[in-house]
View (cartoon, rainbow, N blue to C red):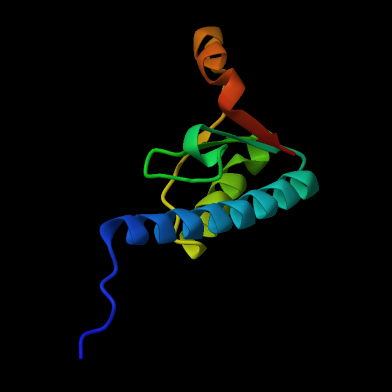
Length: 109
């Protein structure tokens, strides 16, 4: 006897639900880290919407001496939750870019 066939849409929905839950966990851990290390993480795009796709971006905005540790922490947290993301040093983004993502951005501090 054959088991129930799982449709492609059901698989996509299941993965979207997993990512949303995992993104919430990642955001909580990043917020806690930022609060205890004097910086912030800025997330935008799908990450800010709780989905985290392959092109999700996270900026680490920390004092110079803490940047590498913050980026390493964020990479590790995302990897533990099996979430792809690009993590960058925050630097100074251009005003036009900030205007573009302004409605789709969350600062975790």
